[in-house]
Image (cartoon, rainbow, N blue to C red; front, side, top):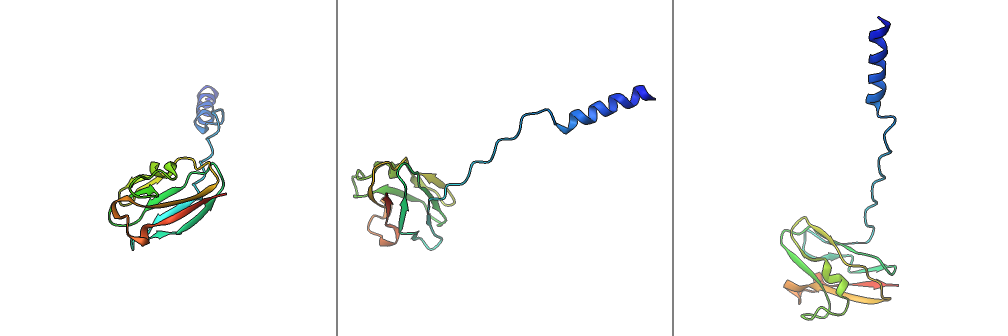
Length: 124
């Protein structure tokens, strides 16, 4: 009987996974978020971030949006914003790293005159 019990105990200890490596810590979510709301406007319209930050654009609207740096149509003021680009409904994308201390305007390239889809990211 002892011969049958010992292998069963060893198997139960192995099943616990006590000798494996620890699970990695989850990556914290990006705290710098600009949301396109279900009503079709951006919130907040101004976001202050430290240099080197990436900003996450989230599209909660029912249509696609293409977030881009000012000015329209060149999009060359803060090119890192252009990395967020096209966002389908329910999609989120980050900008590139905003490293230069400055104020960066953004808009929806597909609806460039819509004030509800314009805002600023202040890097300082």
